[in-house]
Amino acid sequence: MVIEAGLQRYEAVNAKIKSELQKHNKVTVKDVNGQRYIGCALDAGKKIEIHGTPGNDMACYLNGGKIVVYGNCQDVVGNTMNGGEIIVYGHSGDAMGYGMRDGMIFIKDNVACRGGIHMKEFENMKPVLVIGSSAGSFLGEYMAGGTIVLLGLNLQKGEKLFGTHCASGMHGGKIFVRGEFPYENLAANIKAEALTREDEKELNSYVKKYCRYFETDYDEIMAKPFKKLVPETSRPYANLYTPN
Image (cartoon, rainbow, N blue to C red):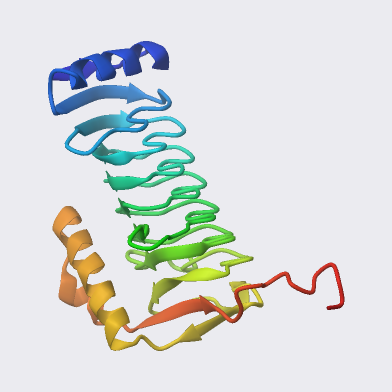
């Protein structure tokens, strides 16, 4: 089923998507022009393909479904998602994966500021965010769990892998970074470590999936070494307001 979004208001587009998904497991939406909330709370077994630029809060509360974007996307994609997959063949705006609890997000190119802010995990629920190129400031801010992978592909001359205040307030989870990265942009609470065998196994699975989606060479990516960024303490602000 194909829906033409065009210049329709987001309420009308989302109503059509919801109606068609009651009859079909897959819906294609073309000529998307910033319509918000597409695919919110999409259940497992359902898929939406988007051509164009979806607006804020696409796939918020995603509940096991799959959304593929053939283009760029705006802010807060995957907000508080509970599971499923988001695949973006382009760039992403701010706060990608805000508070995501589970599921996987693959971004072919860049992510703007505050990617992966407040990601968290619980028992078997473990969110994953894979970024193909660079990330803006405050990557992994207040991160409480899950995994971010930053590949640094196709960086321009002088472009840094991530912006300032990386992992500010991070108290759980881990960030895999490839190649050289700006130590000066790391928050004070963060340390860089070598990968364990378990880390390597986990990383390999994400990179292989990224390569499969975006037709990228796995060996070329893995030719550069990775480091793991983790917090030194689970209470980064313990002594900020009191001396004890």
